[in-house]
Length: 320
Ligand code: F6P
View 1 (cartoon, rainbow, N blue to C red):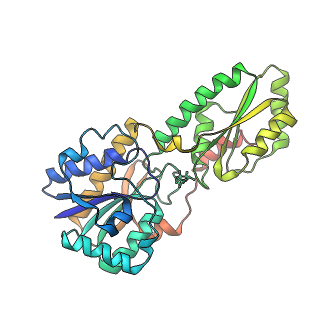
View 2: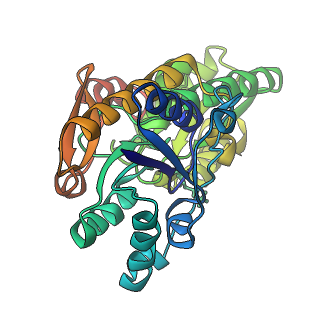
View 3: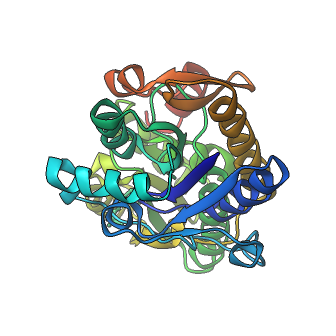
């Protein structure tokens, strides 16, 4: 049996450990592993090769993806999907594993409907915004990158009596910002999922400043579009000199944490079990309540991820 793996959409830490586990597990199971480079673009352009152990040596600790990634527009056109299918047919590859987000899963679902190529999608994005799974690969590493940045910014904030507005990524999802705020001792957290009240927040902070607080940390999610407003609010309402620090793409990089390395392997092993034991797979593997399961792509695409209520409840204390 031949199975190929590729990475698609935004990269994240944990992809390399997943690729390594894939190749090693395939060899142990007498499956021939193939690597597709450059995501869906490489599938179209036949950047596909049989994997060797040397392709995955010394990659377990590296961020990003050695297979590289892309966001493909061509794959939406049938003629390019036909080209992609011909590439797989020549190599007798009938099953795929894709590491990516729901956009990549939907693209492969179309491919499955066109040509019956089985696939399992492994949710991989720092945004943690895929419906049906509690966890997406890469999130723990991103949270730790953010945690380190906040710890370091706090040093200068406290030394200079400043307020810092630290903006995290996450697209429309506030998960990264909320968990970072809760675990790094931020005074304020603004995310799209929670209503905020600057009046009550301001009263609390002003009192704290009068009592001796000489710095403050606010975490804003990029999807809230509030970083500049909160910076101005600190200056005019709270009376603290303020700066914005948008963490940007550093959040997507970094050596994968132990958690991401382990769960990457577990995602891959479960996906391989499913692909080798059953047919008609066009599913995503999901991780809910501590165990793995499989969900069809229509379900994954039809819902909107919501942060669990307990975390949102804890976050309320930081936005009003
Ligand atoms: O989806 C991952 C992500 O890093 C988002 O958090 C962010 O909004 C976006 O990708 C940035 O995309 P790009 O790398 O294309 O600028």
